[in-house]
Image 1 (tube, one colour):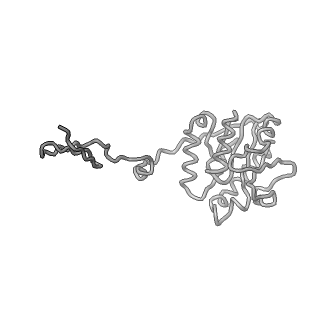
Image 2 (cartoon, one colour; image 1 turned 180 degrees about the vertical axis):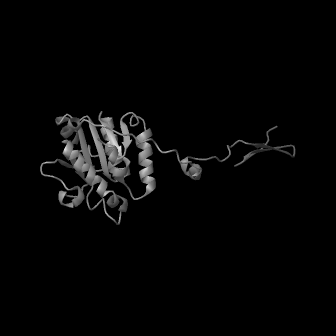
Image 3 (tube, rainbow, N blue to C red; image 1 turned 45 degrees about the vertical axis):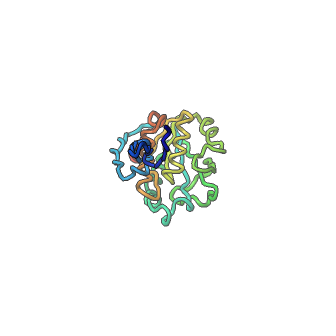
Length: 217
């Protein structure tokens, strides 16, 4: 004897001589589908440690990333404006030590847009690109020509040029120093995420040192 079969979202119902047998569990219960469903359960990890660094000026370059009016301004990133005195102090320190200083800009900026506190000196190289300043530029060639082994990355935005250029540097074999008080974003979370990623991401953790501007010698 053949019995009719009716299916439902919760299982299959078999009609057998007037007796209904419900087979539950044929479909898995709803569960979290990724981080969005669990967003509010995330616990903030402890901050990564900062370390003091002593660098060889002859093999170190300071990368000044996108500190121009289009990307570092009071309306969009007031935290970038607030860090200008620290960036200025680091730039003076790097030049006094004889480090190579390289500027980068976004597509919409020119050297005239660089903030006066961190203005270029004649002859310092500049490249223009998106968040990863190695893409479609000669940045790698500039660094290699000077025998650079370590780069210091400061600038705006933390989750843009700083994160991606630091990553690009590490992937190309450079050691990377990132002073966390020398990068800015629109929000504290973006700076926090960037700091965590630089300290923990595969291949970055072995290459990146997090520090403060006044801990760089």
